[in-house]
Image (cartoon, rainbow, N blue to C red; front, side):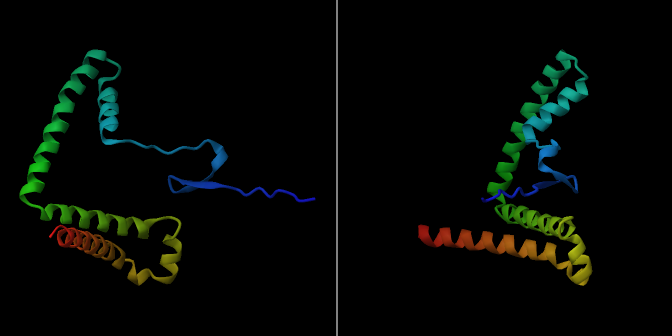
Amino acid sequence: MATAELTRQQLLIGGKWADASSGASYEQSFPFTGDAVGVAAAAKGSMPLIVFGLIVSIPIVIVGSQIIMKLIQRFPILVMAGGGLLGYVAGEMMVADPAIAPWLAANAAKYTWLAPIAGVAVVVAVGYALTHRRAVSEA
């Protein structure tokens, strides 16, 4: 008779391992919902303040995105710079990840500074390659 083996499933939440069945959760937000939640929290339950905050904040988000779009159209290098920044942050996050930080500290502590630089290099190189490939295929 075959017996079923149950495996223990865990999630990394807030830097600590929690059983998947524990009910622990993590915060997930999107820019607009985060803004709406922030307005509601600042209003402390006052409906006129919530409405006023949303009426003011939504145009700010829309106008801000239009300004950023115009800047990117005028200075396309900003896209690569933004990608490089994301690659740098990803490299830093990788080094600080609780799942691998102890191993890195024990085996490669001298080289952790390379991860953010490698993140920038990979993201910018892939972005450049994809841009170049698109330009060649359109020509």
